[in-house]
Amino acid sequence: MLIALNQDNEHVHAAKIKLVKQLPKHDLYSCPGCKAPVFLKKGKIKQAHFSHYAQSNCQMFSEGETEEHVLGKQLLFNWLIQQGYPCQLEAYLPELKQRPDLLIWLNEKRAVAVEFQCSSLSHERMVERTEGYLKNNYEVYWVLGSQFKLTRSISAFQRMFMYKFKKSGYCMFFLDVYREQLNICTDIQQNQLGSAVAFKEILVKLASSNLTALTDIVTQTPCQNRQFKKMKNKTIAKELLASHHFLNRSRMYQETEMVLFQKYIYQRGHSLVSLPQEVYFPVENKLIIKTLPHFWKFILLEWITKKSLGTVITRLEITSQLKQMVKDKHLTFYSTPMIPLTEKRKAIDPFIHLLVQCNILAEVLPNQWLILSEPHFYLSEQEKLTDFSCFIK
Image 1 (cartoon, rainbow, N blue to C red):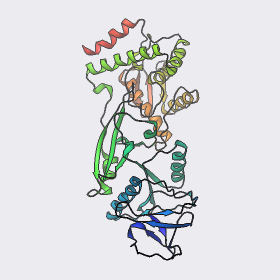
Image 2 (cartoon, one colour; image 1 turned 90 degrees about the vertical axis):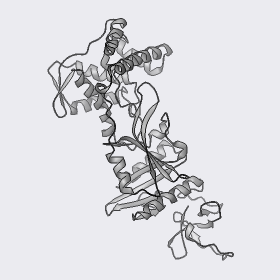
Image 3 (tube, rainbow, N blue to C red; image 1 turned 45 degrees about the vertical axis):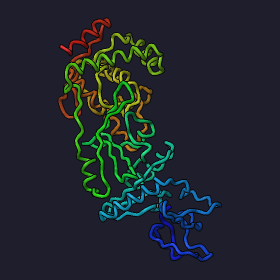
Image 4 (cartoon, rainbow, N blue to C red; image 1 turned 180 degrees about the vertical axis):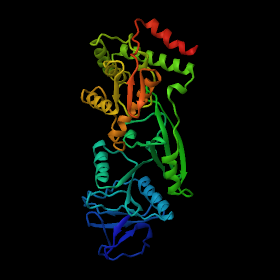
């Protein structure tokens, strides 16, 4: 820990204490959490910090801190203090019984907890800490350490710390302690047929950047519009054919979700051959939706086409259908505690827009759509492949 209590019950920072050759026998410092005695560790190499004695069983301050963690929260603290923001290291919040690495007051009513996570953390513990902050009106930002840096794919652990902003899309924060820079990955996209991800990366040098600029980067940087209508025809054909071959390969390997999907469509008189092209078009939601994309798109399309042509469906009705799909386990979202369920449901919106572009639906009012036509179900694989290939012409 970097902060301890002195004999006057004042918070003192380990780095600001001058070492003396002989310390009195009685204890000078105590833990802010458990109040047990702690001692100062300060040398020429490692960051100065306080540590419990061996017999301590303090649950509030872990002694398993890595050098990266100690240096990281100190680095963030110095960056914020230099900008004039009230900030406290290792502040203990008694109403939560939690201790964020940093607590920042952006104004009188806006308190922000910052957690620098550079070691493994269970899903249950992450959710518990996050909900604790949010329920007590604290904003919370999780910053990941270097070992969790986003590269070509995204893990379940990384996904837990993902945010969603209106203009910059899905985002994550990473701190490179030794380069003293914050890496912000924005507009994160995932291929619907695999685990590969693409993103924009913004590097913020902590020695020269301010928090206002960082806020602007995250909330105002627009993400790219990747709706399929913007693609070249050759690209559309490639996506459709790749999606078709993906289903065929999955069928051969008898993957669990694929077996469930086949069973579902067979019971309704359909097959992989007859699936309409709307089920194959890529939409940007793989980061949030865990279910096989063809599966949930088919069920939603089926629900729409069961209604009569000329019927108007509303946002409320779509939300109700999504809830039923979740209940039936036909729609499963990834665990992303920093993204509320209402925002997750919006991951369906690109598919609704796609159906408008395909003339299945027409938006008549905000959050209201008129059913114009039914999708075409194919009679043979050759018909489907010919149709998909037409986009090249």
